Image 1 (cartoon, rainbow, N blue to C red):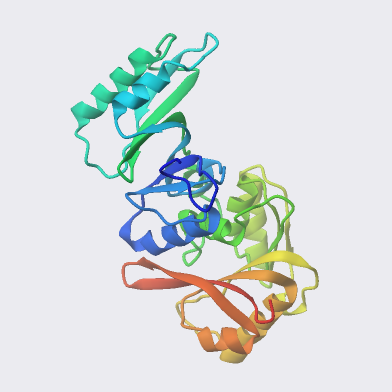
Image 2 (cartoon, rainbow, N blue to C red):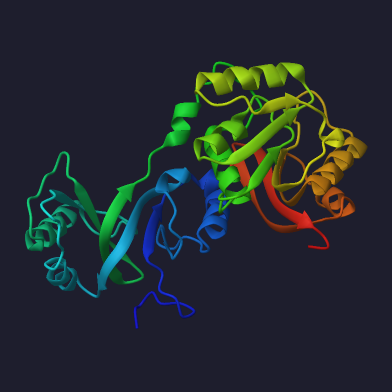
Length: 319
């Protein structure tokens, strides 16, 4: 039996992750929602096949082909790889930081020498990764995550209290761990930060906002990135439709606080729109969530200095 065999199924991917301490909880929530497991030794073993560029925290993904107690075992198994004339490269994927740099390079060379074919360091046609996790070594095809969210930081229409693009991307993944066939709504879309991250991952999402200036700004931002206009002017309380997921970033202003009755109306409206609701809030609103007929299924805090946001994963109480 494989050392990674769990519940009768053998996970086949290793994802390595990294995050700032302020986003530690957010990273763990995204991993357990999207991959079904939390990181250990900065890695997640999962049977879910996810594009590593979806997450702002995933650095590498290894599709596990071989595993063993030693690198020598992997080197022996690597000799059976058939590349069909393709060039290749072996990279050491760090997890726990316990292997010195020189030893990492040595492991790469030892494994690479056993693979039949031509090594190419700059532009290889195939990339293989080797890593150590849970006291075992794993080896397989490797992909590095691309920081797509970085491209969306410099919007032509920014807003000071909008979510950061990295946080927004993680929130979208928490809300929609499996995008295929899922209809998503962002009923308080603001300048479109969440919309842009969702569209960049190919998700089916619509956005609405009561503020015409916000919708105008969202349209400018969407056009800047060559994305379709999927935003409209509307109040969440008057919206109609049947969505799988709603992402509700409750309006936040440094100079004012939302009246409790208005917030409750918004939460009740979100409950009517979707079966799964992810709420982003700067206040403790557990009582309001309960009054709106929602149950908090999971949660985390995201901090930036002394400022804190709560991310709540909710569903209707009868679900």
